[in-house]
Amino acid sequence: MARIITNSKWTIQGKYVVITGATSGIGLAAAKELATRGANIGIVARNQAKANEVAAQIVALTGGRTTVDVFLADMASQKSIRRVTADILAKCQRVDVLINNAGALFETRQLTEDGMEMTWAVNHLAPFLLTTLLLDRMKESEHARVITTASHGHKMAKKGINFDDLTAEHHYSFPKKFIGGPTFRYAETKLANIQFTAELARRLEETGVSAYCFDPGLVSTSFNQNNGLLARMTMAVMKMFSRSPEKGAETLVWLADSDKLTGHIGYYYTDRQTTIPSVPAQNLDATKRLWMVSEEQIGIRRL
Ligand SMILES: NC(=O)c1ccc[n+]([C@@H]2O[C@H](COP(=O)([O-])OP(=O)(O)OC[C@H]3O[C@@H](n4cnc5c(N)ncnc54)[C@H](OP(=O)(O)O)[C@@H]3O)[C@@H](O)[C@H]2O)c1
Image (tube, rainbow, N blue to C red; front, side, top):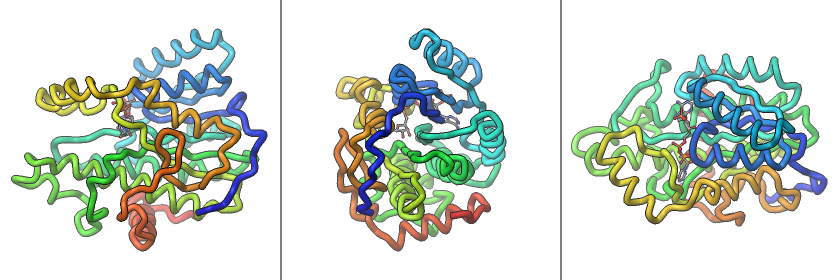
């Protein structure tokens, strides 16, 4: 994936950025910074009150110089994502940057209304579906970028994605569930973010839409607060070694804003540098298989 892009006149100023997971943590920090730099923001969130509060904060921060729209969707529901995409397409004449950032880890195995395992649905299928449905609008911009928040945690998925167990029964079975199974499941979804980005970039060659993913590092956010006392205590300890959300958002903001992004499209970035992901992340057969499986799971074959 070594195409050099030449959009040296790129600036985030005046661009329209759709971002998920901006009600908290890394996404919130990124949305504020991008708005400060002149981007107009579309927040896709499940919690209307939180999203309205964030929108008000951003408008106050920029003195009303940028517009902030709120779009409501639960990233665990394909129906909800389809509905919100229709809202975005109706409201926004252009989408220049799509940031797939919402994500979570689930200690208990849950199936979504679509029959998907929850971590997979929120962390991988939601970006896959949202991107697929917004791509035609993005292609209308001279240049556009899709940026997905991955994680160094993908390295824990040492055997790659287990395509024979897409609803993760194994990870949540006894005793796996109590010895890191859910974290390994999370790792599979973050590996999927990297493989999705690589394949998306390949399929979008020559379109003007580029794709990137990144690792924010270990960041002090609300991540893993949905999993009970032990998880919250673990996160409290980890916070002592964590970056601020602003620091965690730096590479994301750079990927969205930089006019010097002449590096590799489809790559995985850490601290503004391309980084070689794990060996399974570089497996081309698995990457193509992931794409096919994901198309089946969202019921769309478009690219
Ligand atoms: N924190 C880290 O150390 C770290 C490291 C590597 C990668 N990451 C990745 O960074 C991304 C952002 O996480 P964060 O650390 O900033 O955590 P966070 O503070 O918990 O933020 C997660 C965001 O995702 C949203 N979200 C979660 N589930 C959703 C759903 N079903 N529908 C709609 N929105 C949903 C949350 O909305 P609500 O406000 O409604 O909950 C929130 O805005 C994730 O993809 C995570 O995997 C984090």
